[in-house]
Figure 1 (cartoon, rainbow, N blue to C red):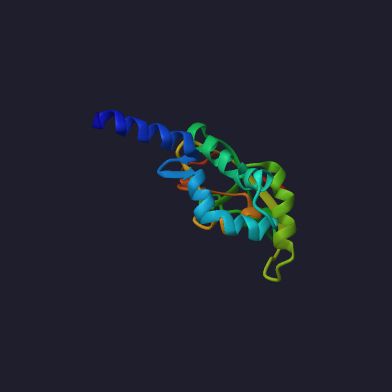
Figure 2: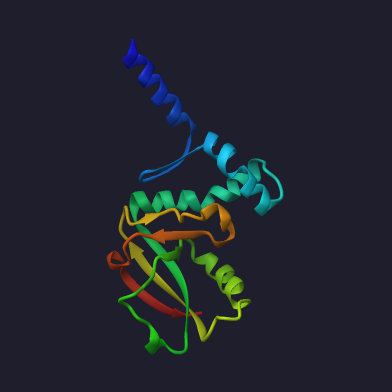
Amino acid sequence: MREHIDTFKKFLLKENVLVKIGDFILTKDDLDSKYKDKIIKHFGEYNEDTINNSLWTLYDIENLYNNGGYIYRVIWLKNEKDFNINNLGNHWLSNKSDIDNIVSLFTLRDNVKGHPYYIKAYTPPKNVSIPYDYFNNIEENEVLVINDKLLSKIELIKY
């Protein structure tokens, strides 16, 4: 009997899971109890559309975690010689289309020096995670790279 109850609990949890990225599991209950206010703060309301908009990048991260894929990072350099391929960083984007957004967001800051470039790289499976502050910065659509030394097929492109 106990075995059937445990199986049923696992079924309910699975049915309630929205995203699973390694050890990170986001359920509908978690979203409602922990992140609802942050979604409202960002989008102004909490409904099916704003929930889906807040989860798109998490779905991308889940896919990258499971399958690997190309990711992008915006950097500012005075010239291409300043590019350090040995220190690529951990904050990346899952979609090339988000590059314009990041350039716009960061160009408004006073401490940005140089010209925008972006890096395109391939990450193997299980080398990405959700940023710890994801729901505080939904607009950044950020992917956290676990180990930038595992990235390959690296290209530097002027924006």
